[in-house]
Length: 115
Image (tube, rainbow, N blue to C red):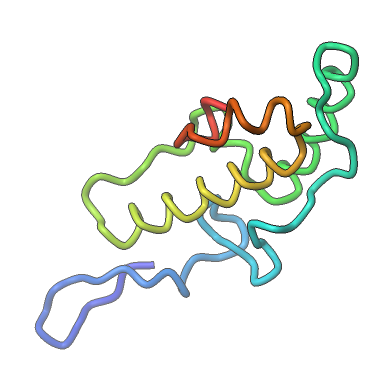
């Protein structure tokens, strides 16, 4: 993930992340992807929705963005930007699976963990 540049400094390359890294995004991991087909409507379907969403996020290795275990890197700009990108994708996946009623209240939040 970190390579030496021609001037002796170290540089991170996002392309060096492997599929086991939570910061890895596959080309199909887009913000318009629907991870689950059901929409959260409130307490009546929360348990089923939550379980389905958790399973879907596990398949993408992204549960750390909702439980707070994947922390934004503060020393490497490239990894910090990749964290922002992954957080935005997870946030989009979550927002795409909630009813319009909940969407408008959550769309301005910045962290997937908060939603």
